[in-house]
Length: 475
Image (cartoon, rainbow, N blue to C red; front, side):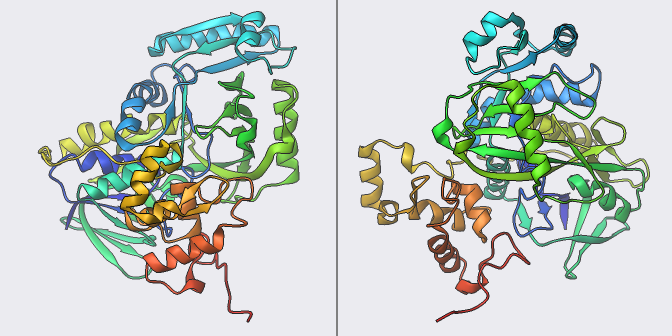
């Protein structure tokens, strides 16, 4: 019997699980995929928004500003890279300049500090590769960037280190409430919990309906991206936005915490979760990015990908106990700025909602700290040699592009939450994320996964069921 079961292993569910593990509670996370961070938290811009865009008084505004304040210390505790690089909303017309004034006024009402409207000369001094047609920008100095899947994985791992339980391949198909909830997975497994928190992202409406609440209506938008190699580092240093529209913040040009350059996303309404990229989508990204910047080094493109953004038809976050099912808490429609808001959402759900249903006694053994998942290449030569003497596996480079060692991959396959797929290792260590995209290192990564998880080599998959890499021996 669990005190709380969280459904959905994205960034909101992961940070909520970690927040719960700060208390003397028995808690678990139910994730329908083979690994965590497989939905929206796997593929998004990684922007830590300042908080000027959301309408004052909304959940988005409240949780965005608080989450932005929490993010630096949270990332430091979890060993996750965070950069306070600042954001620029760029104006290309007189109407855009008027919109900047509105955004600045809204941000100030939301409590966002350090907002400034700068002119063209100041903008080009900050970002020389901005197009000459730009007229000015809103400069939000508290904006930042983080790796969304690294944050999610680290939060869940830290929660597990502090006693939380993770169930993967647990697709919820049934739920019954008597004195407590009995939750059933597609494969027949069941768990029991006093409280359930629905953080199922794109499927939050379906999950709520399984529990008997049909009030949650969720839509989906696909966003495609183009990623440039680290050789393009420094092309831009801040997150560059167009002035926002009703479909979102539009195509961005921004650096990542690992010094790549990211272009996107598009915004395409979907009936279901299709994450294929398209020529038309990538063409739209390049067309808009070319309006923002000049001389974009597309020759450094190493991959493209797409993610799905779930949104509620209320156009705000839904964070509340169900009005129909007692003990079911819905966290739904967590679109942008959901990543930024996630720490604050977790804090509110635990202290403001669950705390009213269960006693919260502090876990005095809670350890908030976690070591980075990959770190070797950033060590001094002296530290590298010292570590290799202690553990020779750190002396063998597996991924040459990203300089990831065998020791780091072994660690990813043996620490919480264990990587059991090629993409799982990729998200934890960056092995396979470089220029060759795993062309050289993948067979060796598969060998390590198989050995650490006591699997047959040919049973190692890319990302779980249905993504087989090997079908049999050729000789």
